[in-house]
Image (cartoon, rainbow, N blue to C red; front, side, top):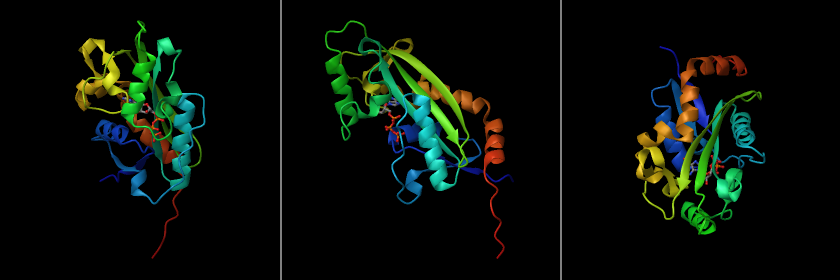
Length: 213
Ligand code: ITT
C-alpha cells in the first residue's frame, strides 16, 4: 500500500482548519496542523495580496517544519468600503478582537449604506521547504446583511448573505457552505489535480536521509 504523505495545514484558525480537513477527506494525505508540533514562531503575513500572504505562511511553515505545508489566506472585500477589510480582515477590530467584534464593527461601518455588495476571497498555497509553491484562488459574491443571522461557520459568516441559497453562510451546513464558498471553490481546483500536486510535492521535497539502525 502506498504510504500517505504528511501535509501540514499552516493555520491557527479553528473554523478554517475544520473546513479544510473536511475538504481533503478521502485524499491520501495525513493532515497535521500546527498544534501537532511544538511551539513555532508566528507565521509571517506581510504581503499586499491574499496570494502573497498565503505563500508566506505556507513556505514559512514548510521551512520551519521540513514538511510540505498548505495555507489559506482569505478575507472579505466590501464594495462600499473600497475593498476593506480585505487582506486586513483578521485584524479589522484590533489584534485580539473576537469574530463577533469584527463583524459588528463592519455592520456599524455599513449603517445606512445601501450598496451591500461584498465578496469573500481565498488564496491557497502549497509549499515545500526548498521554496517553490503552488497557488489556487477563488472568490464568492454576496451581500452584507443588516444584522447577523445563523450560528454555523466562523468569522464574518453571520453577516454574509448568499443570494442563490437565500441564507447567510452561518445558516448553511459546513457541506453546503463548502459547495459554494471561496474556500470550497479554490479547493475544488486543487482537488481536480491532486494527483499531480502529490507528484509535484514528492519531486520537490529534499531527499530524506535514510537512517540505518
Ligand atoms: P491563519 O492566518 O492562521 O490561517 P486567520 O484567521 O488570521 O488565520 P486570515 O489571515 O486568512 O486568517 O484572515 C481571514 C479573516 O477573514 C479572518 O478574520 C476570518 O475569520 C475571515 N474569514 C476567512 N474565511 C472566512 C469564511 O469562510 N467565513 C467567514 N469569515 C472568514
